[in-house]
Image (tube, rainbow, N blue to C red; front, side, top):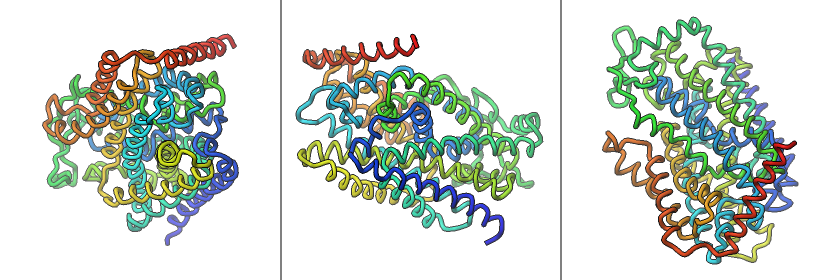
Length: 529
């Protein structure tokens, strides 16, 4: 092993050791109760809440997927996605966070999203809870697989080792420290990882722009590619069997730019709708110690989101100017962050920056594993199969289910040519359409009924598959991102079925009113302070 690779390994190994120590530190508290294990006992502060929510949300997609899209297709697709996500982040903190924190505590002290929905409608047969838990298991397993792909690509690109071995090593690391430390370990490590991620992004960007000749030179280089630097046009790499073609001088070839019209912009902006249904983000809202601290979390989280998305997009654009023919497939383009880090930074420093990718990946996969595990252990095992199960039995079954989910995710991640952006976009649509509308209606419309909630979840979740696999391939007006039509259909189903079904019981309406009043009171108290 060369001296450079040894320094990279030392930096990243130190980071991994720190992650494991965090897991061990919180092991005792996490095992005290299932409430501690799954939601940290509702004792998380505003900074940890904000950073852990954003870090768990972005994943390796932020440092690999988004720069890869910008490198491959140019500004439009990446920037409109980033704008949609930034708006969605802000609105989710503003509209949902406080109401959900208050309402979840009133509704039977719910500690998972399926718990909250089930308690919200006072159901006895737990159909909503089971349906929600099953959708979480499906989509989070896919989401976890995307994180394992990112880990495999990272170490394979850095050290020239086999993708399979590196992917398995990353999966094992995440599984170990989440299994012993639970939500507290996850949130503490995510706080640190959020700082590492944003440091890594700006460190690479600060090195890449001067290396490419400055901002003016970067802009001049990429303007030469049709549609690459446009808000309303998108670059079209000329590919043969998925590989971009090059000319005699080794320059990558592009065709005439494709238009990026209003329908496409709305489709891309719809990424922001996904936030209303992301269980790993919503759980952070439920876990904060006091509702009035969410205002501070909103400012911190939104600022982090805007800065990191902007930097990730800029890295992809700068990478195309600096290394125009380094990656000739869309999957390979997701390595541009790794490429720039390795070439432009001193080895030890590059190792710290590379840890940003590992941080992004770990901070998401730990959340996905924990939320999917809680969906089964609390909502299916204890909620349906063995209602008299003790807290310790729930904790034991949690670790078994966590292992099973990780194994399925590993099987999905075996394909090293997977495009992280595409895998994430599908799972994101699944969560956004399944849970986004039902969360908004449940929190803000007292006329929402149990039947309406079920109809909305089923329509949203199934439409994602239907649109993605059968309708979207037709292209044209049908080529919109599956989240948008699925979200709209789910909302229509909730409203329509709720109006057609019997009004909610007085007990449900009364609890809704108490939650609304208590949430408003905490807002007024915060503003007065």
